[in-house]
Length: 125
Image 1 (spheres, one colour):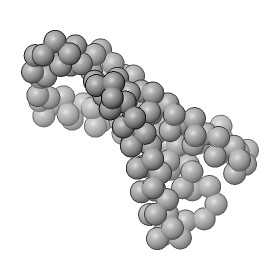
Image 2 (tube, helix red, strand yellow):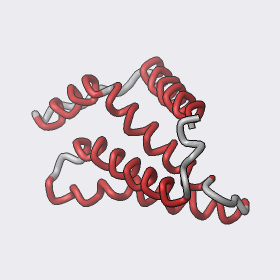
Image 3 (cartoon, helix red, strand yellow):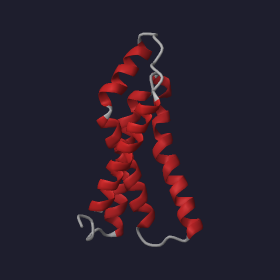
Image 4 (tube, helix red, strand yellow):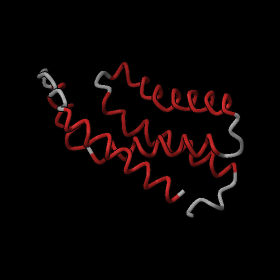
């Protein structure tokens, strides 16, 4: 696979890059400039959750870093795939209009897309 030669340091670098990519991808969802610091909540919260869960399950080696990288890249790429839809919603919010409530079909498409992206990444890891 593409990452079979990764050392622990390489996985740390990949995790930092993936967390940064997720933070950058989701920063546009925070409309108020004073709240932009909240963009770190997603990557740091995910790191904490995966770290604690991995410790509880006694995962060893690079597994927690791989899981984190998979999750953050999956979310960042899903944000890119739905950029047009999300951009319309952000435009409505900035204009003071109500955002559209996603339909069950749209939510299903989002979840299926996220899972497909994560599966594609997992297969290449």
